[in-house]
Amino acid sequence: MNIVVLAGGLSTERDVSLITGTMVCNALKKNGHNAVLLDVFLGYETEEKDLEDIFEKGNEISSRVSEIQDMEPDIEQVKAMRTDQSTCFFGPNVLKMCQKADIVFMALHGENGENGKIQAAFDLLGIKYTGSGYLSSALAMDKGISKELFNSKGIPTPQGITIKKGQRSVSFKELNLNLPFVVKPCCGGSSIGVYIVKDEEEYKKALEAAFRYEDEVVIEEYIQGREFSVGVIERKALPVIEIAPIQGFYDYKNKYQAGSAIETCPAELSEEITGKMQRCAEMVCETLGLDTYSRMDFLLDANNNIYCLEANTLPGMTPTSLLPQEAAAVGISFEELCEKLIEVSLKKYS
Image 1 (cartoon, rainbow, N blue to C red):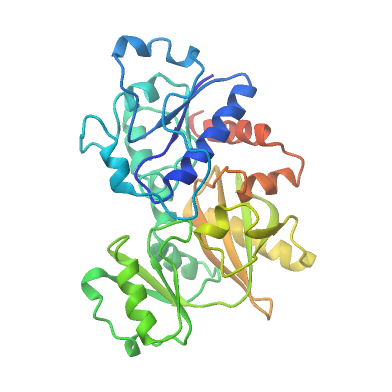
Image 2 (image 1 turned 120 degrees about the vertical axis):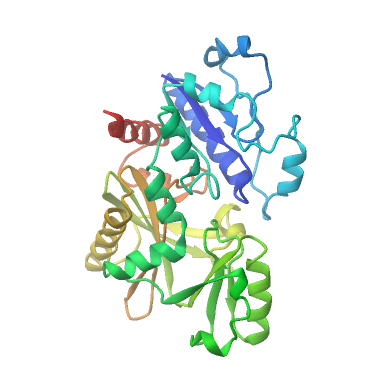
């Protein structure tokens, strides 16, 4: 097949996306496909006639990064790289190339990748893509809405509230939350902008910092416990993986810097808790309408209570990513996983 691996963009998870895209693109080539890596924002500046044999050229034609830094990228610097300085999110020739492809492998992460906007545009243009559709992507991306849906279906999740930038005057005492608690952007990812608040002064600073990323934040109870993740493909859960950061919590640095966390798969849990967490992950998929593949994050407290934090509709495929490790635990190689994700995604078009 001719496949565009779409990555990059303007999300704070841009670098993560480019590593995911590079690995996926290489795997698809090994599988015999004609794959090209394309930055959704920077695009590919060439004459339209040069696109005719673009999939036969066989080389990445867009931005690449060799490694993920321990800090999120400078988005303003990325915007300055765009030669045409257009305000259009889709870079030069991006839509033309995607329309030429048999399918677009969505290697995007974060805003305008996982929030359903690109999926909706592709649906209108008749472009096939991997992953869930626009509505389920939008629901999963919004932590406030997904938390309400979890509560309505009896899916355990930390209790909390959502506030908008215009409500930032909500006082510390009005929250009625015990310390410590968590402040995080409503639609962020990779733990960027997440703060654990221990007093009123930290609350003010966390609110100010979180609102720099977006206009809505979630404030929820802090659950002290072990961290886990469960990948789901076609609503069937993979083995549970445990993530134990060597220092601090599972933030941006600990997610992507090799050696920052100890990951165990299958997780060392009782059969009962393993099954309960896997069923909970499958319930999240059903609730949000995630019908292809996704990954859910969980906490387990000292009393063995399970809490679902969020759903990831386009899980990372980097060297330290969790979904490939879970697949490997049941004998699925990285190349086979990439092929599987395309296979299950094409089913929604048949």
